[in-house]
Image (cartoon, rainbow, N blue to C red; front, side):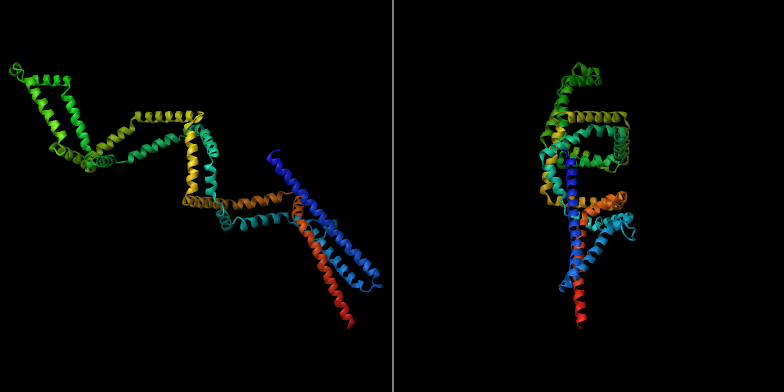
Amino acid sequence: MSPNDTIVTTGFRDDAAKLAALRRTKLIATGALCLCVAVFATAKIYQPVYPWLGFVAAFAEAATIGGLADWYAVVALFKRPLGLPIPHTAIIPANQNRIADNLGRFIEVNFLAPGPVREKLNEVDFASLVADWLSNPQRAEALSRFVARLVPQTLAAIDRSGLRNFVAERMVAELDKVRVAPLAAEFLSAFTEDRRHQKLFDQFTRIIGRFLSDEEALATMREKIRKELPSLFNLFRADAYLLKKIVASSASLLEEVRNDPDHPMRHEFDRFVHNFIDDLRTSKAYARRAEAMKRDFLARPELKALAGDVWESLRNLIEQDAAAPDSKIRAHLAGMFVEVGRNLASDKAIRADMNQGFVVALSSFVESQKSGVSGFIAEQVKRWDLGQLTRLMEMNIGRDLQYIRFNGMLIGGMAGLALYVGELLLLAN
């Protein structure tokens, strides 16, 4: 048996129990009324023989009248007593539409008002419920599988919607707003803090040193010197001498610079770098050149093609991993969900903010939909079959209404007895 079948069966059992209880109460009330009639008749018959039965007769007579009056009142709520077309009877069926509208407005005003809704929502710790749910590894794993199944559809929807091109265009537009020269100046300023740019200078000197020790480079330099010298000097191989002196002097200078952190060449390099940074910050010419280079770079088709290739590669990687049995995406998602749940459970401030957000969102939703809810309730009540409406209300409140008949008989009997005693006292005087 499905859960829905169980609920329906339980509902039928509850309705049957309510109907049985209503019938029993009706039967007892009717029996009590008949008993009052019988007692009244018997007391009246034997009253001449036993005068004290006048008290009994007075009680029974008034109880009968009270019981009949209350029986009429109870029956008139749901149907016409004895089927007679008496005005202002069958009150509930005759006023079905008005009852439906009033019920809808009553629920809207009293149950869906902002104050009661917020008060009730504040009683619920939504954040703790979310934290408990996410902290369960099995639930987190199931949620990660659900999210992973949505990945291909999400990526395909991004492609179809043009969102990828829109994002790319917005990124290019935002990059175009960035002033390159001041940004480069700030970057270089950060790089030159604590003279870190001197490491670049050291690397440069090493590159020059390796160049001077390269045989092919030296041969090229020697050939260049030979062409520049007069022929007479070449007879004495002056080119080799000059090259040797140049290489030796350069190597000595580079070694001296590398070993001396306070060398004048280093200070000259410092001035060059700082002047260049200042020019980047203030020079309009540098700014124009930087902006032109930036626009040329952003307009190149290779950049768009590269962005497309990166997106396709990323998409394929994500889809393949999401579909794999040992998906790293699912594993990371599951771990992230569990971690989020645990952090949420331990952070009261975040839970309070989250609960407040739930209250605001849900109360706003209820406020925007409460008119529709009241209208829906009213329409449903109006569509109910009159017989179904009567049975439903009688089944749920009819048993309590039957006790009015008991009370009517009791109160009526006591009133009749009091009047009878008053009559005897007046006649005795």
